[in-house]
Amino acid sequence: MNEFVITKDMLLILSPLILLQLGLAVYCGVKIFREGVQNLNR
Image (cartoon, rainbow, N blue to C red; front, top):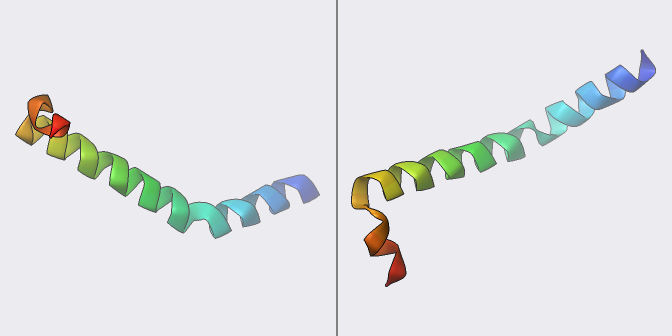
């Protein structure tokens, strides 16, 4: 039970970072999907 509490606290601490990472990934995916891959190589 103690280990679960520790991991839960770690998740609560890291959740803003995880959300930021996910947001960046979604943003990059949408940007690539809209603009096309050929615009990345400039």
